[in-house]
Length: 193
Image (cartoon, rainbow, N blue to C red; front, side, top):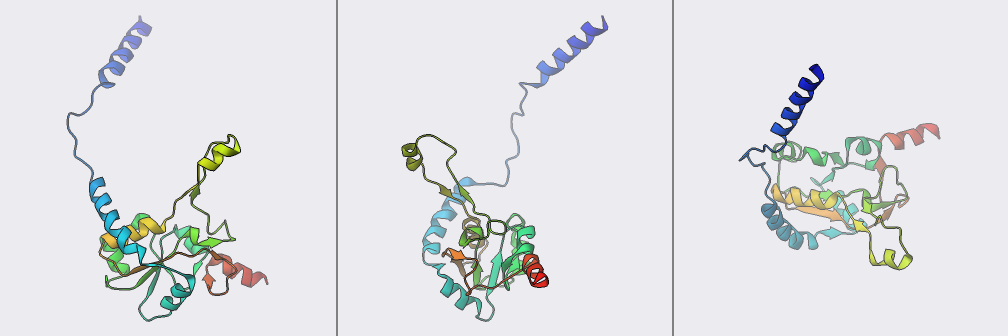
């Protein structure tokens, strides 16, 4: 009897909650159409702000220029371009940006993992490779999708009013002498030598 009553109770509870959905709910503070509108504006703006390593280095030496690294704190701490400041992309808010970069007219230089080759630990590529492992012909039809943090970083900076942004567009070897790095992995190499 106890088993039957328990079974009946569980049956009633399961059937009474599975199909019930709130008639209305408060919508999240997200607008995909606003995002699409912003992306269209940014696409035109960004086109003329993709710069070479030589331009990046030249601009980085100018007064008041900020190099912004938006990767995770862990990766930033391990290795980043010397002089870069950090704000994790997931921490982007108008207030956090204003605290870090008070003047929206500041020249901001951005980069991400996909700008570097030769160090997959500290600058892991964000390329999404096709999962299909079929014949070579089918693989050639599917190309890798290049995902990168610098694109959403650029979009968000622009959206928050920072429009003096330049993005490193060149793929650079980590052995390229034009770029100097700092971080915990750099210090370890110095200590061990």
